[in-house]
Length: 64
Image (cartoon, rainbow, N blue to C red; front, side, top):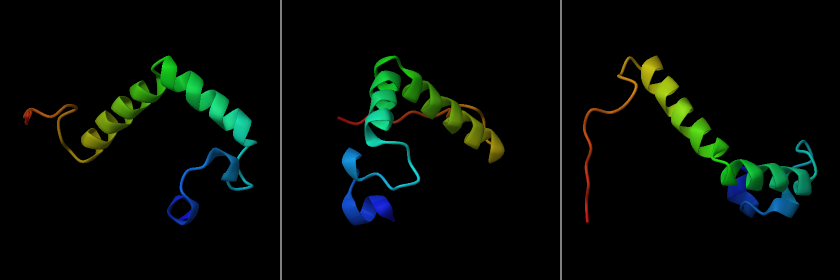
């Protein structure tokens, strides 16, 4: 709800988050070194397994 109300502005993070500068520092660091991508892929695989599906999709759709 917070993001829907005010967007995702770093300086307006809720009080239960660390200071915005710290959050932004780690976001920038993890984005540049691939950590966020790795987390996304790993969580996606875990969710697929939880749903009883194969770890990766067997069908790929490419559109132009």
